Image 1 (tube, rainbow, N blue to C red):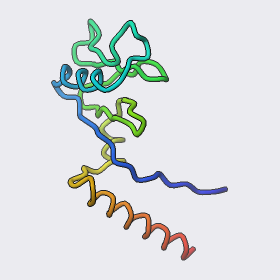
Image 2 (image 1 turned 90 degrees about the vertical axis):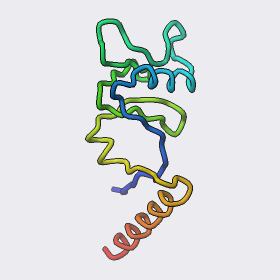
Image 3 (image 1 turned 30 degrees about the horizontal axis):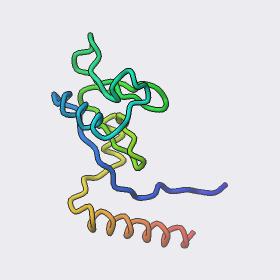
Image 4 (image 1 turned 45 degrees about the horizontal axis):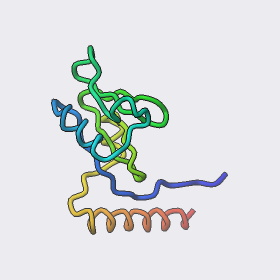
Length: 116
């Protein structure tokens, strides 16, 4: 069975804290809603600290502490903090450092796989 590894990509993300209005504006300024009768991201009545984000899979609920990720195709979706922190590192210089480290990690993985 073939093995696959995730391609190194740089993403934009923000953590949902008490910045609901800012997060909704960030999403709504950059994407069209799937259902044009509602914004792409909004704070529903009765859910004081949550945001609903329209995705192709349906509305996804983001809770305080979750990260909101802008994917490689411009899509937005929430991600639980433990999954985000296990998957992503903060990119200090997105133009060089993150790419260089990803290239080094891929080269090391290739060396290890060749030694099998």
